[in-house]
Amino acid sequence: MIAELVVDLGAIRTNVERLRALVRPARFAAVVKANAYGHGLVPVARAIADLVDKFCVYGADEALALREAGITKPILVMGPTEAHDLPEILAANAAITLWEAAHFRREVAQIARARDRRFPVHVKIETGVARLGFDPRMASGAIAVLAADEDLEVRGVYTHLAAAEELESSFTLGQLKTFRDALQPVDSLLREHHIIRHAAASAAAMLFPALRLDLVRVGIATYGIWPSPETCNAGGHSLALAPALTWTTPLVAVRDIAAGQSVGYGCSYHTTRASRIAILPIGYAEGIPRALSSTGTALVHGKRAPFVGRVCMNMSFVDVTDVPEAHVGSQATLLGQDGNDRIDPNEQATLAGTIGYELVARLPPEVPRRYVGYEPGAKTPSSAIASARSSVPS
Ligand SMILES: *Cc1c(COP(=O)(O)O)cnc(C)c1O
Image: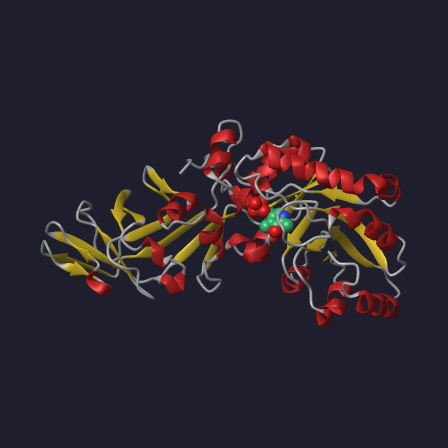
């Protein structure tokens, strides 16, 4: 085995239980796009299906994979859908997102009529990300038209926040005001049709109670990862998140290198002392950001082993000079706990100049994942809760 990702489903359940309790009475949707942030779409969804009110995905393929896996909870497709996927999406009873009045108007009508069922939709309103959504000035008119459309079942209206992770409260509360003002003319219509409102992702769900509305859409925190150092500093003392991911790989060679020699492509790194350099059998093709070259860190026998030289396509180097017990077959931990030390996604990501989100989302689906901490049908073992630790700010 070249590398392994161990996913603690018990930790993920613990996070969902804590977050769900925190946001109550708002409902809880788990965001499982990008292969459940690298943790594995179907195993994660199966492990938390009994705890969540809804799943949010990006694309139709993810919605269909969840239904094939036997998930029956409501699903919202947040990203764009293609017309040819609409029949399967309706058959799967997943909701799509509309952000333009003319979006699929004809196709959706045809399919809904052919199946004699209304197409479930959520309407998105753009309030500050400049991404997808109706212009707030047009939103109430559009919602009135869509809610009256016999081919559609409008289940929700939502928006997305731009700067909650940065704790930008004036911008975030401004977005809330824009959203509320846009919906004000259709307030009674929303109530009559039981149309829910939602805005908050992890950061706002945890730190901006006013943004919780009827439902929160929580991604990154589900996996025990803080959205940003700011959110961790603000909330880390009152809300413990349990990290779920451990990423390990064995040392496949350990070589002694004299002082002053170069290591790796481009001769970008030179040893400053007689060194022991270990080779990891994974590189950027296996999910190690190349930006970790000479800046990343690994744990070997519980001690820090810094990345040296450039990360190659399928291999990389760590310096184990200060880990005398390191040998071929020793395990290097790139994410997770080893001995008394741990590396969280945000810490490793910061060393690569990126964020925890990108690091985990880019873990290739082909890397084998081993699931621990939860058996469907069994209770969460108390060990998983006992080992739940608050992740350390990076
Ligand atoms: C990804 C995403 C979320 C979840 O964001 P986190 O910060 O991971 O909680 C929520 N809503 C939308 C529209 C998203 O794209």
